Image (cartoon, rainbow, N blue to C red; front, side, top):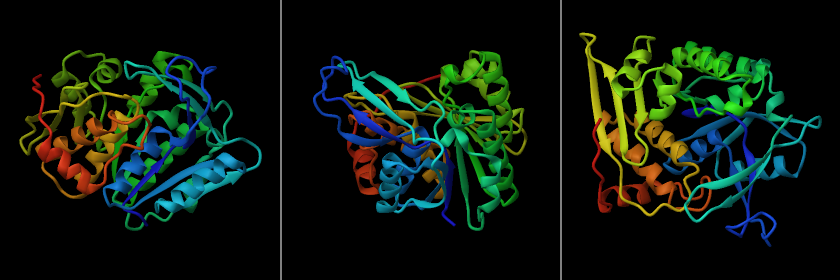
Length: 323
């Protein structure tokens, strides 16, 4: 079994060569996308083993994703294939300000057909971390049930669970349903990683410390809050039950494409947890991977190797950050 496992919807990412409209695009370079897929790639590039759980269609998109995973040694043994639904894809135009326009082709996708029984065939021996997001959970009631069951089984086998809420409001019937469902998953997790605005949405609280207390009181061991481009903060409780906080600034970079920054951050945090780094160095690494990712026009192509990451941390100036 790999050190890390994730479950999600990997997609083929078609990137238009025009920064104006899709219609003006003459070519569509093909890359890979999907929040959990980005995290898996980031973990892999930092030298750790990772496996992926999902369902793909028996189509060229599914073949491309499987081939890519096999090429970079992401374990595909827990991926199902189906002829009854297509693999999801997306079309993206990156605008001059770094914010992309994206059209998704994922309604009724193969991944959305994943059912809880997929968990029954998984070997959890040796698994150290399960990473999940709110994206896969939002696809359908059956994917929410699948993710919840996977969390339970991974924890029963001693794995740590990291959770990035990564909200997709359009995939839920209502905001209230999304908040309730997300907090149920958060309560099962060991490490919860929202952005500040996400934490405000899901907790109903505004201050980062109050948000952290909301989830620490649920039993979450570490709450890591992303503070936008400025940095991040980690909150946990000491042996006396007192809240302890660590705040670390991010890095000065030129932003090209903001997509994938949070996924890069998660991959940095996960590998830091695997390696037993302290809170300050965990946030430093997570901030660095996120900062590197936004300098690349893609969802995951900019994610660094271990050597590239070390060089970036040593050579790149820092910002200032405070709560």
